[in-house]
Image 1 (cartoon, one colour):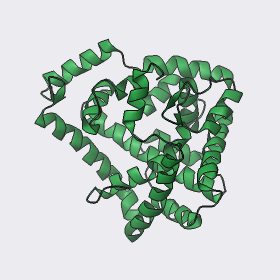
Image 2 (cartoon, helix red, strand yellow):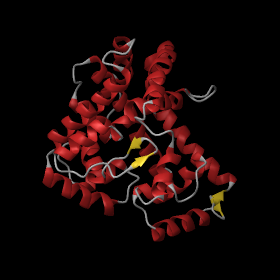
Image 3 (cartoon, helix red, strand yellow):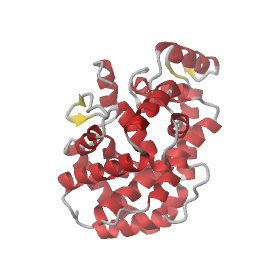
Image 4 (cartoon, helix red, strand yellow):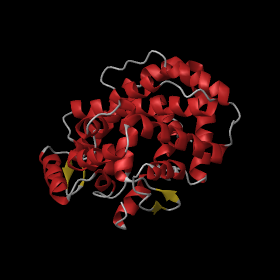
Length: 300
């Protein structure tokens, strides 16, 4: 559950993250993508199955339609386009956006049903609250959120709750990309300073975004030259700059919290509880350190 005293938008993001983000680790999703011709899961981080790269890019990007890799790289923000573009080009030789998007939804909901049951207590109420939270949010500058809106709701309460949570997850992600790009960071730079912000080893998690040593050397030199890093660690200015990005992201998500009003706590408790169950059921990573550890084994 989110920590006491955490800004409300950040607490909400943490509460819904495993519930929404389990789509990327769902064995049911991986089987559906493999049936379309994609590779199987390349390995596990602990008990959690990791996604095949082309399947990940195409499935997540499919909500925007049959778009090229350059568009998907732009929307995701943090990945090296040199890896994204050929992966998407290959993926679209295997399937189309509508088909893999349907497999994505089916697999995500199937894992939730397996872990939580078909109708978790309070599901109808949570759908009502998440509808309220997403209603009227601006799509300007938010391509993944807009793409999910265009998909509509599946029509089953658990599936609807997942789709609405995914919308909120991508909304915050879109706002976050806008925040760090507006603050003058590029993708390799934000990856490095985010590792320090999370308290995990430098050049661990960021490698899952396909940046090589030369890319990271250059990014670290730029950050050091700006006075944000020193000897691979945060300076006070660097820590403040990274926190400012998160604050700006929180501010961009304030309309969500305002829409929930006094019912925010109910969402935090109920969906946060489901997220804990998902993690306990090996449906989502314990934290970014798990993915970083997978990279060190050569599987990532």
